[in-house]
Image (cartoon, rainbow, N blue to C red; front, side, top):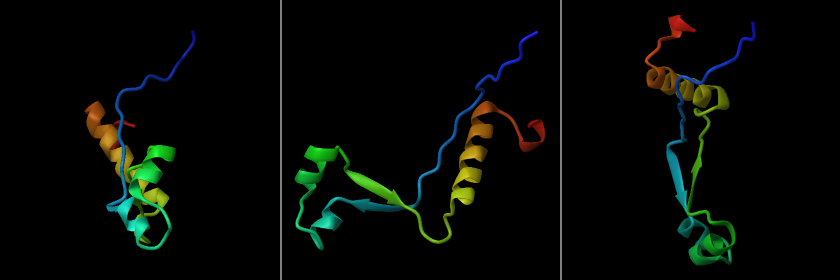
Length: 75
């Protein structure tokens, strides 16, 4: 008998700090239009010292469990 993993829920987490392209215009010779035209990027989410990869992973996992209608004890 073959066993397989089945996706039951998904979750994500984005750092709280949002940096718009306009912020780069203040310190770099660039513009929002230039960045968007070449990369498609409009804004970035940047973590601070409290938002480590493990903290962000835990938050995403919690969201995935909620999406699946499961709890930590179900895993």
